[in-house]
Image 1: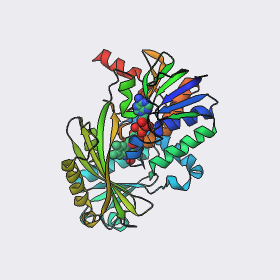
Image 2: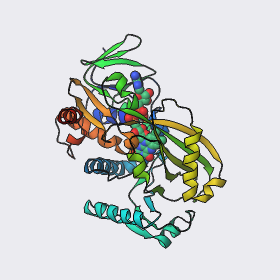
Image 3: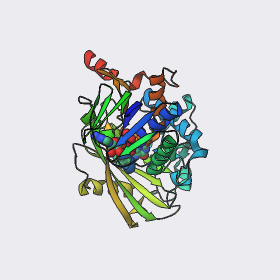
Image 4: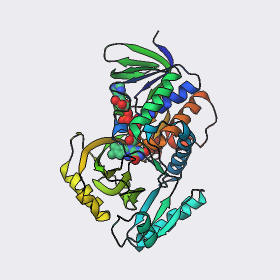
Length: 374
Ligand SMILES: Cc1cc2nc3c(=O)[nH]c(=O)nc-3n(C[C@H](O)[C@H](O)[C@H](O)COP(=O)(O)OP(=O)(O)OC[C@H]3O[C@@H](n4cnc5c(N)ncnc54)[C@H](O)[C@@H]3O)c2cc1C
């Protein structure tokens, strides 16, 4: 009775996308979560659908997934709030403007449309930025969505396709084609998918995934105060830092007129509580870029945990030591963007179908290889 083709642990946006894709390909699927759909990092994320150029592999995955979101656009219900508002990467000085040029060149070579903005053009598009910014790079195809509703939508699609869901069920072990719940119930499947986000090492011991805490603040409604997702170019330095706590200016306009203010990154912070010191630093940084934010009312502040791998790429594919276990985790700050591509790559590999982009950079087996060469 408890036998399936695929058993997925984790009903975040990644698990939900995988369930939907498995169902679309005719597989019998069960999806288990100890809480609810989209209640982990998915509920805490910003929902910026962004193309990134840290590495070729990161670019390939983010671009592929952005295209999948675009293709799904007409099916997305209103409450997913998908908007192609574009990203503006902001340069404060000449040095950062050189980075704008480099980024533009990279995107042009990879056929991503961009537009360089001088100081005046930037101010026209975003009049509430501090005066005196040097310029920026507009990436018009980037967008935003509301992650909890996106996860719920994918889950509903999966359920329409026959996926069974078991919510409020804590998985205590997975491996050898078997998933074990804490009440003793066992489920059997040829493919077991660990999509439990930052908790993945608890079910697959030895995974090098660290929790990376982040804070976000949402304001009351101030329509049109911000019009694009605005990110400082220093954001990359913040995302790259492997040791220190970091903050970066990153704000997002919501359809409600609210403004989502981020972001922070911390290793070794295991508790969900708001850290007032880092929150103050984050808000200070935001006001350096947009002084008017300081006069706004914040309605809520929260934290979430990104699942960070050492090479900043997710783990998508079979576990070398147990071929029944497949990983779909380690997406750090890009799991909303890359959820759809993750699902396609995972199911293509399971079914032996050709993958749209090379899958090797994301294979869990790369980690062992790195160690062997070290
Ligand atoms: C502050 C912040 C801002 C972010 N902004 C963005 C952004 O703008 N764009 C972007 O693309 N990404 C962003 N991210 C990253 C994104 O939110 C995550 O990468 C993504 O949500 C990961 O989804 P997931 O499904 O892998 O994990 P999760 O959403 O964490 O889901 C994992 C699920 O597994 C379940 N689970 C765990 N252990 C067990 C168990 N033992 N038994 C049963 N169930 C279990 C949990 O209950 C949970 O529901 C942000 C993250 C943070 C924290």
